[in-house]
Image (cartoon, rainbow, N blue to C red; front, side):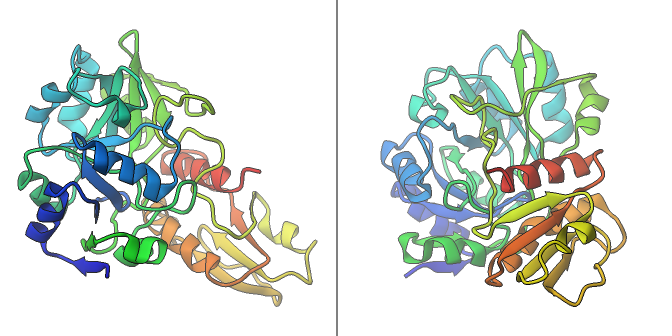
Length: 319
């Protein structure tokens, strides 16, 4: 039977036995295993039904660990680590030979971050190995931001969820790679492009790749509810076309006057993009549980974290 607990030592014990534990981070819950255990890494891919061509993110406890896993680290990467770690930044760097190819999808690079969550940092401190930890959900579905989202997905297939409360940032980490030492954005996330550029200057965006992706989150269809979902700039106009449908709405600031809509989720009544991002996946989970005919999401302002929210909604609504 799956255990939902705050017991860090119990979680460490399970991981040392090469089994999996769902762990909290400030972004979303991750499905964690020892990066040096083939058994654990294969179990992650199997439980998530994740294709082996999609690399995993490695979670470490300190910047001091970085050189154990990566080499030829660009100066811009050091600057970003100093600024944003622990935090919601993942960097794709040239890997040390000791990092298993299974973790990196056979690539010569590895995705690394230090999570900013007290429970998971304490867990990492209790282990003598880093953790691979993609989001704790079946591949392509809505990411989990509470322990009970994970339970709903996996039930007794998983031994334990380390309960760290609701995830503060609510969407995945921003992923930065380096091509010829130039910084490239592979995934929009909880740290805005503007914040990254404030540290290292202008960056190129290459966040879509269907085959052999450089990083997680680059596939066009991802983060998706089971309910058919649409992304529209004018939600009120769009829903008038479907008077007979059971419709749920995912909105930025305020509800829409409607007698036909079944349920509405407002992500931030005060128009705060950070609050909206934090609430996004939980709202999507609630809508997806309502047995609706469709979900209609409102397009967000296309700047700062609004870009990251739009990215998730575009992938959630991709055909």
